[in-house]
Picture 1 (tube, rainbow over the protein chains, first blue to last red):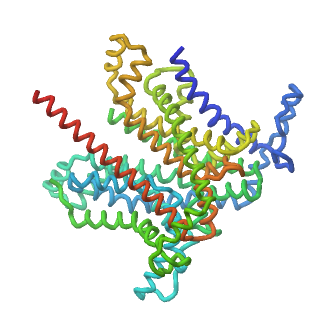
Picture 2 (cartoon, rainbow over the protein chains, first blue to last red):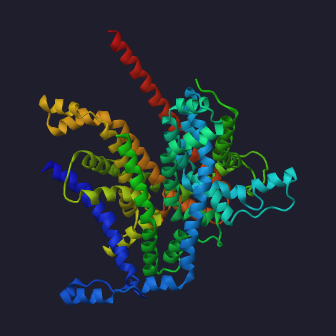
Length: 296
Length: 271
């Protein structure tokens, strides 16, 4: 009895507020837009009995998905989200690996402080961290002021409202997600392996390439997924830093819903976004499970 | 003993400069006299004064704190229950679905979570406001709590609980007197995580808030979409300060506790 309560309370909560909402999104993605409240049709009418339910199902169709596939805005948005996420993940890895490596090889008494320094931005408001780059990258921003002062450029560079600003924003905000798993993998590594390799005639660089990188592989994979998956659906960064020219699907969904008030199309966009994400999510889960088994 | 090599020292310096420079600039320019944010015109604290007189911001901050407090508390209870189920309940019908629903919200794009909850609230005719934001925040943060707590429960020595049961505790008493004090650090960090996530959330709150309730991130969002403003810099500085003090205090407290435990252990070994 007690066990049943323990299971049922969180179970029912998640069913009602996580799973059922998805079924609703799926259903509305198959509906049509209507000038009504709520702004879609059909709505399920239980009062009409079986006939009502049959009418309801017969009115559902794939029209919104058909619309998405014919309007190239959506294709481009999906593709460019995946592309931006992939490039940004790679850049984050390039920036994050040396930091994780430096932390793992720092003197022992330094490590708690370094760890704290990585975690601190994590607890700071995401919105504010993205916002802080607006003042840096804008036309009369700090970066341009600095570059003009050094004489490197004579005209301000346009960085804000371009994809470059989006990459900077993603690398900046997601860097801790990349550093922490790589650091965890590097910290576990046995330093005597490197000594052995060097004794056996490996150059330091070769030892790094042949030993350190493969041994930190799980950390790299976990870090890349932790950056890639949430970046695809990112909304705040492209909206604040990317300007109107940067196309990302999270932003399209938001605008479809709040500006165009087209709920069925917004739902169809969400369904496809979810389908795109399922593959990386499953791969990520498998990688985590493999790692747990390897440790346990 | 490891030492800093020049390569490691450089990469750490550059890395942390990248992580902290934007925030340092934000803080410095929050004390700027000029309304033109990027042009320095002398030291002033006037934007802090303006901020404290801005009632819309204060109201939004109050709503945000209430939402964060209530949602993180409920999420901690539900998340701890869910962690117990995951680690202890063994097999039951729908276990795979259960663990899927625990992990999925962690990687779900916020726009989807927000949209789906909004459609649910409208579908069942629930008026949007503070209550619906609390429901939404509780749902995603309970998953984070459950992940944090279950990682602690996995390494928990069950024989302690069994001993308590053998000595005549009811299961509830055993939980309250033995299990809870041991997993308390994980439960507290779960609560803190849930609290921060709720304070921070813009996207899900925007979908579920409706016109009657505005949280601080929504207010910040509507003001920064038009560009950088000195008032927002002041607000950001205050928020960064609160987080920094909180995180540093927490790390000192845990370090002290660890040192005290070591000292106790040594004393016990000597005795």
